[in-house]
Every structure is written in C-alpha cells, then in structure tokens.
Image (cartoon, rainbow over all chains, first blue to last red; front, top):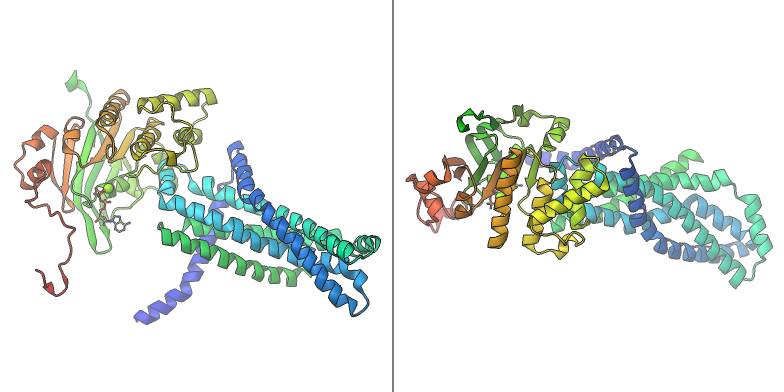
Length: 256
Length: 269
Ligand SMILES: Nc1ncnc2c1ncn2[C@@H]1O[C@H](COP(=O)(O)OP(=O)(O)OP(=O)(O)O)[C@@H](O)[C@H]1O
Ligand SMILES: [Mg+2]
C-alpha cells in the first residue's frame, strides 16, 4: 500500500502542482488594478529584471549572429549560394533562435533571481508580514514581476535579433568580404514582417509568460530554508527551459 | 466613573485545540480578553505562544474550538473577510520581518500607502512621528541590514502600530533591547493602548518587565493555561507551575527539556 501511495503521489504531484500553478496565475490576473502604484512597480521590475539582462543578451546575440553566418557561409558555399547567407541567418533568427535563445538566457539570468528573491522573502517572514498587514503579496510581489517578464522578454528578443544581425553583418561583410548590397537586398525581398518577425515576437511573449510564471510560482512555494530556496531556483531554470522548448515546438507546428 | 465603563470582550477564545501532526500544541484553551486591556502570554519556550497569536490573526485554523474577535468568528472567515479583518490588527512578528529591499522610512510607510490615500507630506509626518516615538528619528534612510537587532525590532514596532489598529499582537517586543529602549517601548505600548482604546496581547518571557505593563496575565504550560490573573496576584501565587515560572525555578511541573518520547530502548531512563 505504501509503495502504491508513493507511486500515485509521484504521478499526482506534478499534476497537482500544475493545477496550483494555474490557480496562482488566476490569482495574479485577478489582482490587476491598473493603479499608478502598480504601473510604477511594473516599470521598476522591468528595469530590474529586463534592463539588467540587456548586456548579456546583446553580447550573446552578437556572437550568435557571427557564428550563424560562419556556418551558413560554409554550408551555402558548397552549393554556390553563399549570397543567400543573410536570408538564412535572419529567417532562423527571427523565427526560432532569437526567441528561444533569449528566453533561455532570460530564464537563467532573470528567472533565477526572481525565484531566489521571493524565496528569501518567504524565508525571512516578509511574505507573512505582508499578509498580516492585509497586503496581498501576490499582487505586490508576484504580479509586477510576472508582467515585467511578459513585457521584457519580447523587447530583449528584438534586441538580441538586432545584435545578431549586426554580428552577421560584421562577419559576412566585414570578415568574408560579402557585398553589402546583396546582403541587404536579400533581406528586403525575402523577410516578411508579419510572418517572420511578428511570429517570433508572439513566441517570445509566450516564453516571457512561462518564465515569469514559473519563477514567481517556485519562489512563492519554496520551502522557507536556504536549501529550499536553492532547490526552487534550480527548478526554475530546469522547468522554464524545458517548457520553452516544448512550447516552441507546439507553437511552431501549429502556426506554420 | 470606573464602574460606569462598559466592559466589553474583544477576544473570546473557547476550548481551543490545535495540533501539529500527532503533537497537541494547544489543548482546550479558553479566555476572554477585555477591550482596552494589555494582556500577557507567558510560558516556557515552545509552549505555543506564537501559535496562539497565529490562530488569533487567522494564519492558522484551530482543530477544535472557536476564536471570536470583536464578535467575528476568525476561524470561519473567508480570505476576503480575513483581509478586511487584518486591517484592524497590528502584528509584531518575533523576528521583526522588515522588508529588506525598502528603507526604514518605506517600511513604515508601506501599510499607509496600501490602506490610505494620505498626501505625501502628511504621510511623511506620520511616519517620522512614529519613528521618533521609538527613539529612532534620523535613521529613515537606512536599509534594514544596516540596523542593529534592537533597532530593527523598534522599526518593526513602529510599522506595526502605524495604522493605529484596534488590536495589537506583539511577539516578544522587548527581546534584545537595552533597558532604556525597553522602558520607551513599554511606555509607548501603554500610552497608545490607553489613548486609542486598543486591546493588546504581548508574548514575553520577561516576568519583571511585564508586571509593570500588563493588566492581566496568562501563564501557559504543557499546552494548557497553568494560571491567570493580574500580575500582582500571580507573583504571590502558590500554584506550583505559576510559582515555578514567575520565580524562574528549575524544579517544578514545567520541564526544561522539550518533551521527547525518551531515548530509544530506554537505555538512559
Ligand atoms: N511550522 C511548524 N511545524 C511544526 N511544528 C511547529 C511549527 N511551528 C511551531 N511548531 C511547534 O509548535 C510548538 C509551539 O511553537 P511556538 O512557536 O508557538 O512556541 P512559543 O511558545 O512561541 O516559543 P518561543 O517562546 O520559543 O517563541 C513547538 O513545539 C514547535 O516545535
Ligand atoms: Mg514564539
């Protein structure tokens, strides 16, 4: 009996947790007020978790752009099609690599810090103190971080894409001596704003929601101990990364 | 005049039982706490003083029995009712629980910002007056980690009373304070209590400090109330548990050690 209970709890555990997570999401959404204070704290969080991820996203974007161009030129040269490099690079960036890589970076950079911050607040009874003051911690702490992550990730993705294109320009035109005119004209004719760019932005909006929700939920449900907060932080990275890739596949297969 | 004052029960607890797993923390506790009084909960560490405060503030639900605060049944409140109820209680947690990301000023201002629409200058004056009252005027721009333990406790005190709630729950407000701060806080508790007609519950270990402050005292031992009464009466009580606690004796019915089921196999029994 005990082992049976053990296995059922192993099965129902994640299901129950997903349920709790959705309930948590609904509680967050129902506490949206559009008050000046709420807007202010969202802006503050966009600065704290969004703007502070900017540098790492830009650096990574630049190098991803360079290495993509390198590989693309190598591959396309075999077919004498190396003038298509900008098209290949930018299409894969806009549709897949930009949203996914930025989201993974964001989960590691911002998601973890949100989980650790909320977990620590819980461990030091600050969450309890808020509840006792009739202040809703979900509204004050969780919601602004969730919304900030929803807003920040698409913007960061756009920044990642821009820097990746710059990296591609530097490598293809600067290092490999490609013709700049061909590089840009291929983009002008082959890249569609809605299908390629906006499609990727939708993805990154969903990823922003996923990372934000996972990060605040794990922080909020962390065991109020040092080890508990550590585990919660790790879980945030692992689960958001998995969810990002799973949802990426789902969205891509449904919308193309 | 004194007789004419209507005596009203602010907090009524009946047959309260609270368990954690197999441990019965509180076992059949009943009390009536009068409106406007300061009441102390005393008793050995781990007896369940903090637990009672958590039950009164609605953070924990009793297994049996009822808790009524100003006629409302706390144990049956919905989340929304609990939210409204808590605007009227101030709680000083055992470890202060200041918001580590906010300055001292913002810590004290948080309840005001959440629950009132005071204009900024007025809010500032109110916060500063509370800070001055705990003897810490001038530290409003420090962060909580820059404070000493006693200072943090006093800031937490100021934050707990800033909304002038009807009921104050203090969990060991005096621990870690120097004698001057202790009498400052004590005077402050008495004054706010009498000026605003609050009802206060203070959890404490310190017998002498409390005899000077409180109107009534409950001494807890082994999950029950071992004795109650005004502090002067308790001081001269002959009840063994009460006498032991008030005089800090080693011998008596209250054990010093946490109740363990004994060593395995009874080797050392
Ligand atoms: N979260 C918890 N889970 C399990 N047991 C707990 C928990 N919190 C407290 N207890 C137990 O409940 C009992 C009462 O704890 P409580 O914190 O109320 O004691 P206390 O009287 O406030 O002690 P102190 O004076 O040391 O603060 C203790 O035996 C403790 O072990
Ligand atoms: Mg305690």
